[in-house]
Image (tube, rainbow, N blue to C red; front, side, top):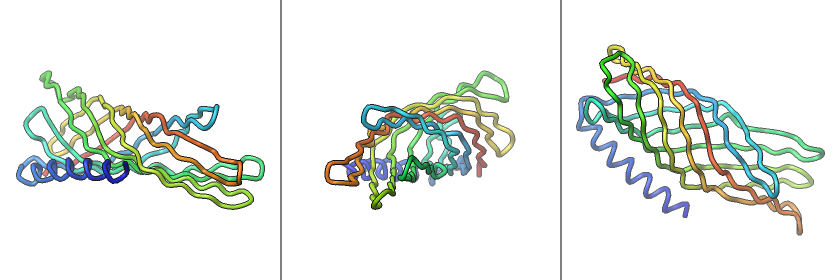
Length: 195
């Protein structure tokens, strides 16, 4: 599954990148957001909120449609419970496309779709240390507002991604913690430069 997700996403990214290279409307930018991932572990579900940083590269295919690839990293999470500690890392590689509604104003609303994959790494330290790294397919949508000022796009958006990342941490003969990353919600601010 990991190889299939990577192959599909990289293939789509390659197509988008080759189209972008042939276009004069390429852009590159950075993003900052507050990412909330819902994690199901056993009978419990928890939401974990961390800062998320990203970079993006893409192209305007016409005045109203843009396509881009992006890479996002969450701030590392760590917590301690009794005699155990857990650390988590999360990366997302995404391919997105947006439709911008031109209403005749400087600020344009947009809506779009996203596919990609998620890489999560968990490390549990107790009597011994166990690690689990998993990849999963993600898909979802984003919407927001973008102001286009000269060569810059300044964007406020909200992205929802459905995730299917599942794994387990086995730290004793009869002790296994199974987990699922259910979804990701991110309000964000992005700034891009068109060249």
